[in-house]
Length: 128
Image 1 (tube, rainbow, N blue to C red):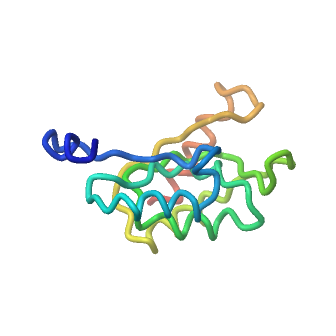
Image 2 (image 1 turned 30 degrees about the vertical axis):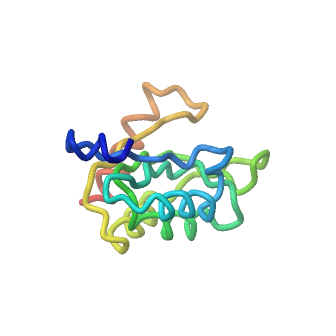
């Protein structure tokens, strides 16, 4: 499928979304094994449930073809959620050489009509 994507000029992004790509190690093992410039990572900042999700993100940034910024992180699969640090995430993206789009993916419990504008504002400030 990477060859077909290449004929269309389309990048494929494998998302860190549980299962066989739940950890940074597993995700990077697959992407590296494919060895195609047309396959990268659709990096979801809230989907690594590890003791240091920011370190996992940093390892994957060089392979990112798209980023979905979640407003919360979770250090354990069933553990409590905590606010994500937008400035820290943006710093990791910059340090890793990422120059693409960053989408806000909102799944938190607060009313999105109230929360999304506030989180977008914080993300824009971090990106400025």
